[in-house]
Length: 348
Image (cartoon, rainbow, N blue to C red; front, side, top):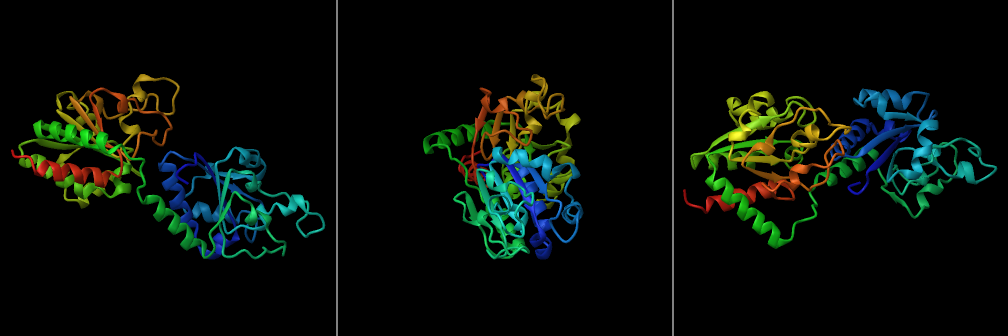
């Protein structure tokens, strides 16, 4: 899942039986937030009746434009990195087109078997309603996760949330941390930019501990809130309020953008598109013209992001290559904690 860019989810009657549609939607949101292209392949006879899958996914809050009918999506499977089958069998059974004389021979199917990788979250390996063995399960590119789909999808989401970054070399990481701590120790003004990566890493409490430490050293600390940072409007406000950040320290974009040019350090915590200068410097991208937080105007920029991959938009972020930017790659909770521990050992 981490390595896939294009992902197709195939829901089936087993998803309905397991009542796993909310979990499927949550996993898809997670993947989408990581910048993946996620779609749902809808077979006309998946479920008990036509439209069964559409209704369940709509109830789980899935956007209608993510649901793609069989004829439209079948040409895409061969160029798809990963298919996740959730409780579907006959509708993805290659035997329908490869074996004659079976109850499903000649039945149009979703061509999931053509994808580079397939994950099957099905209750067991038994045949579906047709009674025809599913040859998809035995393909070399298939990973079979047997059991209740609700539980297996939950396990996939939980595993995805566990940080497995491609780390900087120990020397580079140590040098970057030293440079970042030096910038923070000297700073009189700091603006923190939280993003969805902060939420994924559950880094808000360590971030607030770092802010408190900076304030003890005499620095002014504010938080820059972009209206679309996170999964929904207000996501960052809620997380920071839970960590006891004073509401008056949460500044909206229009207000805080005036401050960045006079700010010593802008700290980006798990944010990408909302601080991507390409939005104002490049034309023809998905974020061109989108208002951003002007973190690049600060004297120093510290980026605590999982990696330097593009965000949800897929647009590379030139902030990472800015000469004033210090990159601390990996789990944001860990890198922020390292800053707190190191800064605590420096006298005021």
